[in-house]
Image (cartoon, rainbow, N blue to C red; front, side, top):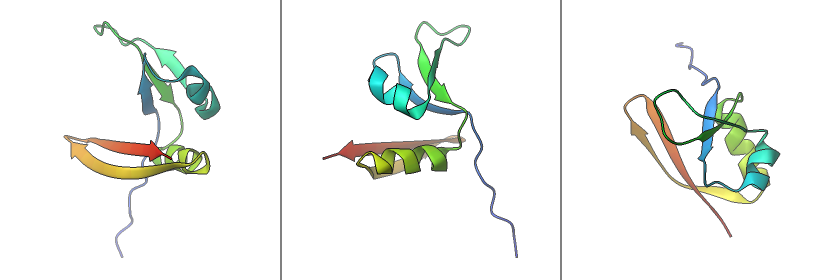
Length: 78
């Protein structure tokens, strides 16, 4: 059997326009990477942990795609 790799953090969870209350619930920290003129929110959790937290808040995955070695999930809440 081949071991399945597990993703590890940090995970980018939002941009500078994201809901600060939701970012607080996720435990995200806002940071600016050298060379970027915008901020992003990150958590140290693996993506699967973040998705579990968002699911418990009523969010559902609508779509997912890969961009290079980056995975992008689109979520929606009723």
